Image (cartoon, rainbow, N blue to C red; front, side, top):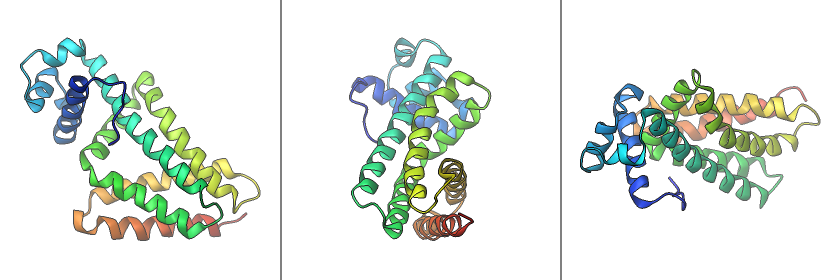
Length: 196
């Protein structure tokens, strides 16, 4: 995951440990003590940086969302450098998803936080920026093949691709790349072939 330059090394260490804790035990396992233990730091270190569990959850969400936003921004730049090439766009989106799956802990933590955000409006707001940017990128691709309705179409594509990511997690690691490539291609082809 890309590093947020504004985050101190110790805070980054704690947040990366929190990612591991959530990936291993879900949100119920996320405690200051568990983060300290995973980071190999003295008890009380995490609570010195993030006083409450709510502060820890918010910081973790911001940490994960910052990495996702950077990845989506990079995808947008790559796609902008070669517009009008659907095969290239499909390959770039597949590469993004495969890249995310290489860091399984981040993907699992993101999914856990997304479920938590369904019950917490403040947490949901943390993920809005990266998801909106992903929608913007996909909308730009969709707009090249559709005359109207690009945004709703992009929302459907992103929702389908999020399902691909979830399905890929359940597969053996060695088969994920092939699964993602063919499934992303199938999803994008199906949406492109739909009514204009």
